[in-house]
Each structure stands twice: as structure tokens, then as C-alpha cells.
Image 1: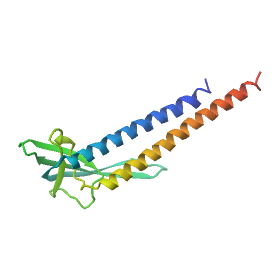
Image 2 (image 1 turned 30 degrees about the vertical axis):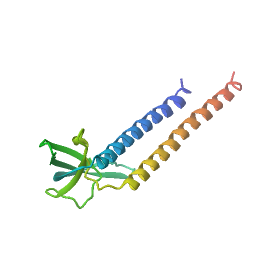
Image 3 (image 1 turned 45 degrees about the horizontal axis):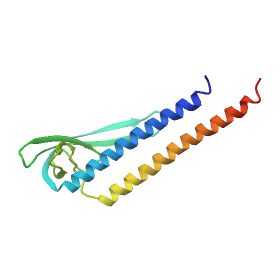
Image 4 (image 1 turned 180 degrees about the vertical axis):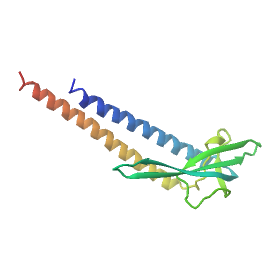
Length: 154
């Protein structure tokens, strides 16, 4: 029973890492599609707010969110939220948003920076790959240690 923790906990950590990586890559793809979609509109920043995570003895992470609203070329009003925008953007600001005709609700107010997006995505993939590999190595070493210990115990 005790040994199973050395497999279950790393497996859960791997699952969480894969989930986070998939979400990050999905959003990167949506932003890239919006930039490549060729459609832009003027949007108004309706609201800004922050969320925090962490705390206690660990470091606190703060994320800035913006809520935007714009009208598509077809006349549809779209409202969307985006995180990690510039801190200088305040309620009432007018910004250019990029979107696709098929999914305007997945627009972005970030200015096109394809190289930066690729670098950020690549670093995230590298980080999560090393993390997952570390979990797998831990599980293999734990298995080898428990297998070796089975020969010593009665």
C-alpha cells in the first residue's frame, strides 16, 4: 500500500502537467489563428481585475485580466476575457483586437508577436517535458528500489 504512493502521486503530477500543457498550447493556437485570421476590430476595455494564487509561505502570483467588447463585421457583439495584458490598459481604453470569422469569441487583444509566442510555447513544452521526465524517472527509480528491497526483507 505504501509503495503505491510512489506511483500514484507522480502519475497525478504527470496528469496535471499534461492538462496544463494542453491548455497552454490550445490557447497559443487560438491566438495564432486570431492573428492569422486577418480580421480586426476596435474593442473597448470594459473591466480589469486581478487574481492571485499562492500565498502563505510561498510566493504570490498575480494575474491581470481584461474584459473586452467589440462588434464583428457581421454586426455581432462579442465580449471576451483575456489574461496577462498590459498593466497600463484601463477601463474605457480602445484597442485593436484580432479574431477569426468562425470564432470571434476567441479573439485576442495582444499585438501580433509570432516569434515571442513560439518562444513561450517552446519553453513551456521544454519545461513540462523535463517535469514529466523527472516524474517518470522517479517512478522507475522507486520501482527499482522497492524491487531490490524485496530481496532483503523476510
